[in-house]
Image (cartoon, rainbow, N blue to C red; front, side, top):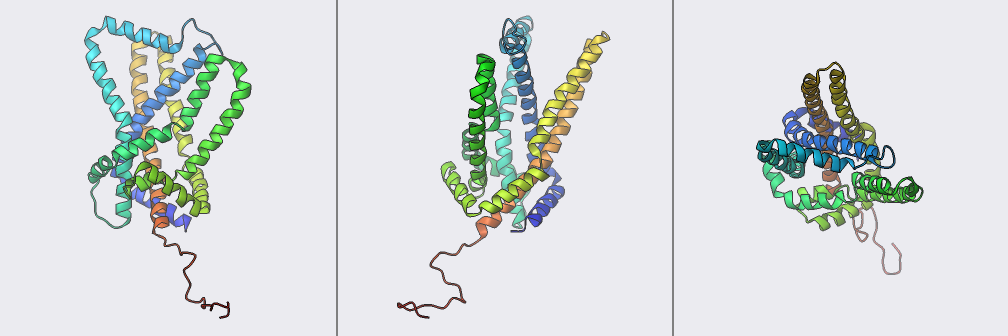
Length: 322
C-alpha cells in the first residue's frame, strides 16, 4: 500500500471540497469545541476549589449551581429561553457530530469511487447510519482518554494526594489498554457507515482487518500522528481561547470597564472558537479521508486462501512427486 499516495489523495480531496469541510467538519467541531472549553474551565476550577489546593468552603460545581439558581430567581423571564438554548446545545453536541460523521464518511467513499453525489445527500447518509454509529460512540466513549482522565481527576479531588501513588500505575495500564483497543477499533466506523454492519459485527470485522494488516495500520497511525497532530491542536485551541477571553475581561475590569471587558472578551472568544472549529474541521476531514481511502483499499484486496494455488506452482501427486 502506497502511504504517500493515500495521504496526498486525502489532502487533495480536502482542498477540493471546502463545502464538505465546512458543513461536515467545522460545524460539528464548533459545538465540540464549546463543550471542550466548558469542560476545561470546570476541571481547572474544580481542582482549584478542591482540598488539593485552596480547599474552598464549597465545591466549584455547587457554587456554580447556587449562582445560576440565584440568577434565575432574579430573572425569571429568562428561564424558558435559557432552557431552550440548553436543549438546543445538548442536541447539537450529542447528535450533530454523529450525523456529520456518518455523512462525511459516505461522501468521501462515494466521491472516491466516482459517484456524483451532492453535499446535501450527506445528511441523508448520516441519518441512515445514526443509530448504530451513536451506539458505537457511546460504547467507545467509556474507554476514551477524556473518560479515563475524568475518573482519575475525580478520585484525586475526593481522596487527596495519598491516592496518587497507586492510581498512577492503574492509570498507565488502563491508558495502554485503551490505546491498544483504539487501534483494533480503527475501522469500526467505516464498517458501520459504508457496509451497514451492526456495531458488534463491525467491531469484530475491524479487529480482524487490523490483525490482517497490522503493519499497514500501525505505520499509517504513526504517520497520521505526525502529520495531523489533531488532538494536540485541539487541546491548544481549547485551552488558549478561554485564557485570552478571560484575560481581556480581567484587563478591562482593572480599568473599571467591566461591561466593555465582557463584550470584547465574548467577541474575541467567539471568533477564537470559530477559527478553532474551522481548523479542526480541515484536520478532521483530512484524517477521515485518509482512513476512508485506506479502508476501501484494504477491503477491496482479495486475499488468497491457503488451498489456492498460484499459476507457477506445479501440482504434486499423492506421493509428493511433481
